[in-house]
Length: 384
Ligand code: CAA
Image (cartoon, rainbow, N blue to C red; front, top):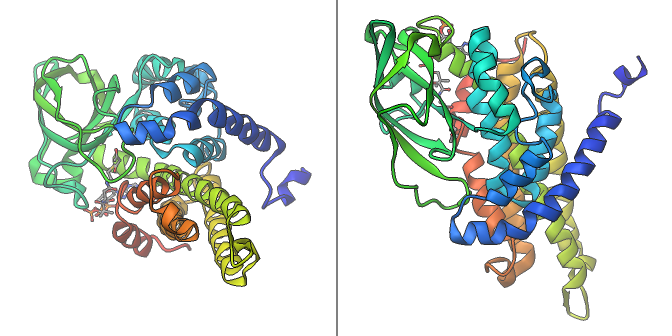
């Protein structure tokens, strides 16, 4: 149809979704953003508002009780939540990250068992890949899953786990055959209530302080064999395929944070008067705003293109996911740093939101693979 030519314009439905998430985020999430950051507490108000409006995990397919939103719609939800509170945007983002292995590779039984409760808001999902000594080198993990009768017994420590402790469900990658490195890793669903699961103290972080990051300890956790996601030995590939999709959601988070900072700074410079006029009237300020908006729009186009790739199987998603995440996170760091600069001394204080946005932006260059790892991924998967 005619919409096929509208390459650079989201559909009317996407625009309407953005409008509704924006007003919800401004009314129900923004008022708590500063407090959530200051106190380093979980944004329960955001979770409640997102669940009440069915926005906490829009990516879950309709067949399993979800909204069946496409990747662009998911991006828009995350963008709009991140625009007011980056910590809260990790609710929809990590629900996608944690459940994508089940969606991509899980059995019908696993999908039915776990995606329904996720879609209903009865339990969040976290993703357990990294370990204290296995970050960028994810395949160097030590956590083991040993077959024992009709189940597996898991032992190990997972680190940097977003929403650990608040999530009910955990996708855990573990070594089932130590001889085979990445081909000897399998993925499992572990439940918070499984015996032997416990959590470390919350990390004291620079930003996204409302999103709990904790270690997950697996101490002789016995789970039935049907909790394995896909075949034995396919867990690493599933984990990487998942990241192909969800690096797009980190790009979305970066876009949202940057948009929040740009919107704030843009209004501020109109109000702030020096040398007898609004500082917005100085060309030096105008050039900064122009650069910020230019970088943001370039990052947005790349992210939306990556979201479109997320719906296809033409093989380019790996490059586009990495490129969008890398580019948008660097843009967000630059844009939020410039927003602090535009507010001057005020920007450096907690009386204004831009210093929080700058601190929150930093993590987007680090998690779901550092931007150095993204370059490894891009170089190995250059567009055909
Ligand atoms: N799609 C499908 N399969 C893939 C794949 C992809 N995108 N990437 C790798 N694989 C599979 C392949 O089967 C491959 O085997 P073949 O060579 O036979 O094709 C196998 O995995 C091994 O792949 P590599 O040889 O590329 O593995 P590697 O050890 O060289 O590692 C890496 C590659 C890109 C560096 C990878 O380790 C990586 O992405 N590291 C970063 C990890 C990361 O992003 N962690 C983020 C944790 S999640 C998080 O941060 C969220 C949170 O909660 C805070």
